[in-house]
Amino acid sequence: MALITSHILNSVNGTHAANIAVELIRICQSGERETLLQTSTDEGGRVSENVSLPDEACNDHYELVFQTGDYFKSQRLPLSGVSIMQEVVIRFTMPDHSGQYHMPLMLSPNSYSVWCAS
Image 1 (tube, rainbow, N blue to C red):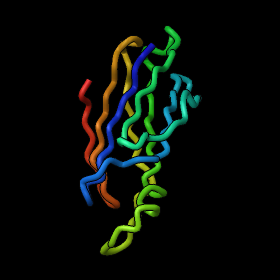
Image 2: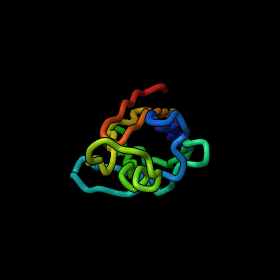
Image 3: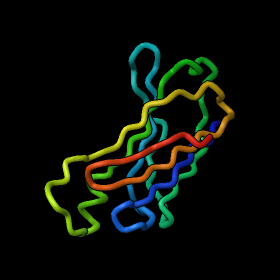
Image 4: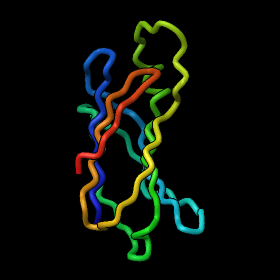
């Protein structure tokens, strides 16, 4: 099993981004898409989920999708301008199906920064 983890920080006010809906999607070589998990960040802004991947999926791509628009609507932050980002999508591969893939995310209403810390 692969371990998918993330820690999301709200860079507007420096808090943990709790209750953001998160989805992991497998994109097969054929182009077919399969949802592998649907969850949300905990009160500490974290996600940690084990995912079982078939052996034949080692060359597939994956998308980790964060529903950031709904999160910022619920925050009632003073915003200058319009918030247009509705989701953050990270596309990556998982060549080691027993590996850990950690992708922290710094988030604001109209920008984000992500990196792989596996």
